[in-house]
Image (cartoon, rainbow, N blue to C red; front, side):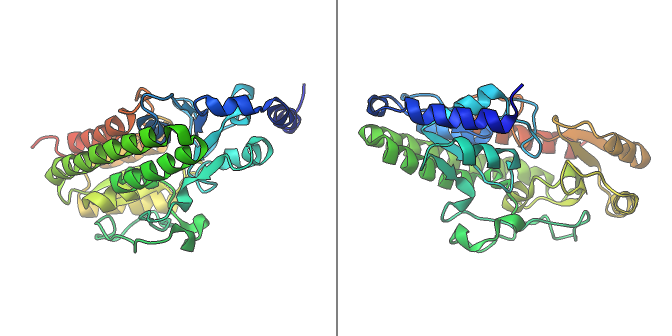
Length: 318
């Protein structure tokens, strides 16, 4: 059986050999690494074509092994959208081996994004989850290794990504540039309305403290002035130590946290143990929209589901 690296090399050569000028008249083949990006791309491509989402439902971008069919999709793509190596580490080697020159768009580099630094501690101060926006400006000034990559969870960032995707598509498919721009304008109007809707919905939970499984929600928390007190683990691939769990138990009791949130991609027994020790409720937060159908409406459904999960658990009993 060929190794993955051998398979990648063969596919890369095949992509070069089969490319032809006739492909320029076709709608572009777009691959998005994760479902939220696929949804934003679908909104921009409405009426033209549908993007392919690489990461299957239930998988985590923090640890995934590319399948041969997915490698073929990368090799044939005219445009590949990903956040960057800070999130989808599994894509670094395949993109270097397979992607066509100029096809890859690393979205964490997008100008104007609101970016937050990675939080390294498991316990946060009482004002840590409240909105404190990082300076807006060039994303290139940031060290990606120290930047929280879950940037799509702020709708303002989503609107900026929509513009970047539209520009990338217009550059590669100028005949349809007007359609991409018009779709992007419509998508940004919907995202602005969604932002207002989420702010109203999440205002109902005020400063109610909670715990998350891993630190994936800083952009949501900062945007809507939420009050997380800590995470069981900084990254889902790393288990928590006894000292962190002990501190979390103390903080839950001291600050009166009522909910702890797991993720559908993971079933951490440690979170169940923490909940049984402290008698807090268990909810589910899904930053990737695992149960969300692909398409332009996927991103709004993802964000509404997050708001509903937070309010459903934190406001229970009101």
